[in-house]
Image (tube, rainbow, N blue to C red):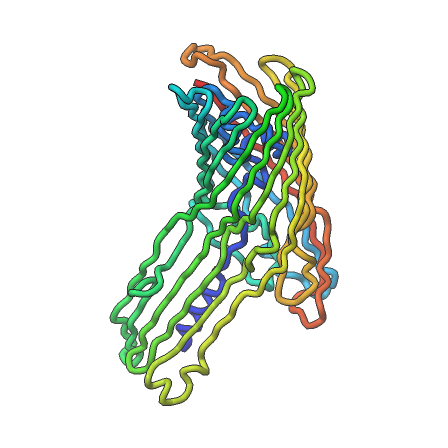
Length: 442
């Protein structure tokens, strides 16, 4: 059984933390990032496909943008018992490095200025989809450790019903790994233990898509005052990896690994934007996230060893294993975002943003779980400027947006019981990064 034990061990390390894409953490585009992400009533380009598809109708020309972003987490996890160091190999999350592309396409004809289509695409630079997480005995950052490395596509349709009311349906599309169950799906092998020969081995898995709807509403009661609301359905990627090994003359070993990856909860965002003057805009957002429905980020594992020989010996059920991950006990959260933009001239704008994101993870004062997260205060600033093409290739000005961000994960403490493998520890974190985008209106 040594080989099979190693197979089970490899499978056990495959689990995935949550959160579908980096936009809720770092913003979608430099303008949103530098204004604290307070865009539910203020998005004015293709980024509205994420923040509020109803706002796509604000753009009257074809708008295209391309962005690059980089963010790094600096983690501080400190044991309270100097005689018991902590295995912190998973305490530092990978850098968030990726590119964003998007466009808004306003339709013409009888629906001119009434209907617009939006597309937004995020692509990590190093991996298409990453499936990775440590064991429950290793502390790791739930929001950052591996969960940002994945492809995501946002689609939206803005419809202007009246001069003051717009609606916008949309959808988020993710990719996930699925080993097909039944009919020879997943990994299969036929092994003759007596001759130590593998007669048959195959793998049947697929990279599939999963979608979640979005609905936005935008109301403009006054020319300089806007309100918006967006509802995003929960989205997650189930990872299923089945394996079946037929042991000739002995029985069949069926192994299945299940995990819920890249989970994002049901969320309601609502915001307001006020043009205080022709040059100054202030935006404010609130967001409710239904984290109490979140599944465990840890892996579930089932092992079934069956067959007539094992049944005759009475040990077929003795070797079965069914380990189900327990609920993480997350709590619902309500956070806030504040942003401002001052347009110094037609060529230059300065921006500033603040955000507060409460943690949904309870104190890890119990054994067998070490999910790290904390209440987070975010600060951001940025600029936007445009210039005419000196080569006169492009008719309209080229827009450049830049943003820098800092987020501070406030210190918490995990007080572990004496029976836990880990000592009590404190943890905190800081995230620094930036993003740059080039935009053009055709």
